[in-house]
Structures are given as C-alpha cells and as structure tokens.
Length: 421
Length: 131
Image 1 (cartoon, rainbow over the protein chains, first blue to last red):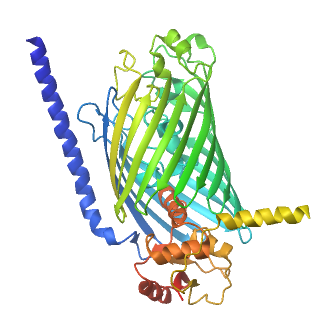
Image 2 (image 1 turned 180 degrees about the vertical axis):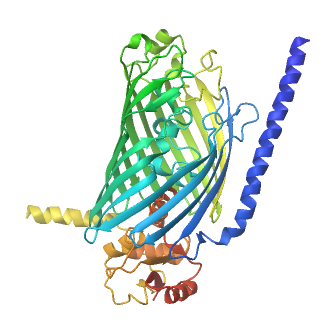
C-alpha cells in the first residue's frame, strides 16, 4: 500500500516536472519565433558604420541512463539546457572596437545563474607593419584558453552539442570562473606569408564568486566565503599555418587565491591552480582532426584537514575527428578522458581513502554525433555518449551521487536546436 | 644543391596542400572596390582584410568589407581561388570575433548585383566580383 502511494506521488511529481519542462520549451520557442522573421538577414546591420547585432537561441534535450546531466535527464529526459545570447559590436574609430554580449543560460544543476553579462570590452589595436598587429582589450573579457573556451556557450562554434568535458568542465562549478573575467588582455599577431604567431596575455579578476566556484575550488561542500588576492593570469600562444589549416596552441591558467572563510569550523586558506593545455588541430577540406592535452595541478592549504598542504594533479585529454560530408552535414567522433589523480588512474587508492566508488575519480567518454544546418542560420545537432566513470557528473543534478553506489557505465543522448542571426 | 632539394620539397609540399582552383566557367573572381580600385593588394593583404584583422586602409579611412553568403558558389570560389582558404575557415574566425567580442565580421549581401550596388554606395568598401 505504502509503495503504491509513493509510486503515485512520484508519478504526480514527475508529471509536474514534465509539464514544467514543456512550459520552458514553449517559452524558448516564443523567443525564437519573432527572431526568425529576421532569417533572411544574416546579422542586424545597425546602420551606423560597421555596427552589427547578433544573437542566438539554443535549446537542448538530454536523455541519460543512471545519472542526471543538465537537469532531471533520466526517465523522459530533460529540457534544462537553454542558451540565449544577444550582442552588439562596432568600431568607434577604425582601430577602436566596442562589444558587449548578454547571455541567458540554464544548464540544470550545473548552471543556475540565468542572465549574465558575458563580455563588455573596448579593444584598441594598431598595425606594426603589413602582417603584424598588437592590441589591448579592457573590460569584461572572454578568457582565451584552448581551442573552444572563448566561444564555449555558442553551439555554432562547438564541434557538437557539448565541448569535450575533460578539458572544459561544463558540469562542475569551475566553468563559471573559466568563461570570462574583469581585466585586460594584451595581444599580438605576427605573420610572414602563411605562417603566423599569436600571443595573448590576460591579467584579470576572475568571476570565482559566482556559480559555486568557491565551493568547488576549495573542495569543501557548502563552503561559504570569499576568494580574493592575486589576479588571474592566463597566457595563450600559438602557431598557425594558412589561417588555421594547421594550428598549434599552448595555454596556461594560473590562479592563486586566498580563501576567507565565512563557514563556522572551516579555516581560511589559500588555493593555487596551474592548468597548462596543449592543443593541435588539422583542418582539411572535408576533415578536421583535433586533440588537446592538459594537466591541472591544484595546491590547497589552510582550510584542509589539519591545515596541511594538499597537492593534486589531474589529467584531461581528447582526440576528435570531424567529417563534413556535405556543406550542411557533418559527423563527429571523439574520445575524451579525465583522470582525477595522475598517480591513481584506476581510482583504487582514492576510493579506499574516501569510501566512494572508484569510478568517481575518472571519466572516459566515447562520443558520436551529427550536425545539420537545416536552412541558413538554423541548426540541429545530436550526439550519443557512452561514458565510463562518474568523475565529471554534476553533484547538484545528482544529490545522492556520493551516497549511492551507482554503476560505472552510463549513456547520454543529446539533441540541440539552434537559431542565430 | 642540398638547399635546392630542400627548397623543392618545401615548394612541392605547399603545392600538394593548395586547394585545386575549380574553374568550371572561364571567369575569375577579383576583389572589387570603387574608391580604392588603384590600391595594390596582395593575397596576404586580402587575407588581413577578409579575415577582419585589418580595419583601415593605408590612408587611414575605415575599411568596410562585404561578402556573399557562405554557401554561395562565388563565395566558395573567392575563398579558395583568391584567399587560398576553405570557406569554413573564414566562418570560424568570424564567429569567434562575433561571440567573443573581438572584431566585426564582413557584412553579408545576398547577390553579386547587391554587392556591386552596396560597394558603389558605401565609401571605402571592398568586396569581390566575377570577371
């Protein structure tokens, strides 16, 4: 009898959840419809000089087995993946650019920040000869890191529905600190014929007080407090042949933050993160091959048990092939791997230490996907993931993650529909 | 002699990777500007312009760039034959500029006729036409 009641209640809760999902879906459709009138206009020309406005509306559907991703995705799936952005760009002077973008994003438990100012910057550049430029960008700037970070929330610039999770972490609170920051970028590009060298260097205040980043960076559940101290440093340099037909990049993030605890029983401390990432890409007429490899070394002290300094190095890499079989269709195949501790690849040691299943300490993801540009500016992408390990599963979407002894292998299927102008 | 062999290797490697110019009809695509028609532009200059890195002419006037849609056969030909790149390389650089606030991509026009009109009407504009 009890079980019948609880089953009924569960069903009721579930149907409420589904109708809420539908409601959200219709809201996003309402967003898209008026915009689609502008379909024949590729961008909104604002009529003053080269000023343009652009935007995008993307709605995802995620269906998973065993674990939730982007909302309550097991069972009938989740529509908790919406990305909407509008931006304005234009030159005040031929060498002085102003640009800003507002972004609404809902990613289930991994992103509940809704609306935010994604970037708002002034950019001044000057020529140093025929093929050399240098410049400075100030304001809220996008963090230049790896191949995809600068434009990671726009599906049109991603190889599929999701960017490789081992390197870019969408489901963990770290993403908030990775997207953009307040400060400045110095950059230059120097080319001789087909060969170009690019360098970017960022000094900024990271947005690590948003989206649970403090909690994630300190590694303490429900930690309240403020991160402050030294600004964030990011460097990216690279070589490009024939405008990116071959490209080699090296990026580094260096974070050194003081944590001022506001949680009773948790001391203040310090956190240092070093994240070097190497990226390579070959772009042929029909094929693109991409690989990125990085290691995150985090050093935590003060707020750790007994105040000791804890150091951990994780490993992230993926290899990816894209095939454009027509102008409108492309296919994707990727193997993505994350290891929480390089000295404990199978997770055995960490599992024994923490009592968690060993698959919490890694994630290997084999992805196959398709992408179709239905008509100009309308796109649909779909992909299937076969995942071993739960190292990148969102603890917010799966509150019982550390209590239950779930399976190692799970599946994820995802579709995203997007319109842009 | 060794230098010669090395140079030959470099040149032939470059030729292998170069996209085949697809000239189905006997036309060529040429950059088109009214006010700057006497400015000499090399392939490197055109890449700086169409990839959005150069934003003003040598005399300091602001540069306005016009292109046809990505799938237009003439745009594909201009990308491959004149700039020596695949159209998706341009698209990926323009998208990056738009969605990271680092530049303004060229303005898209729907047809070659529109391109000619808009270039005549816009001061210091550049695009391309078929000859």
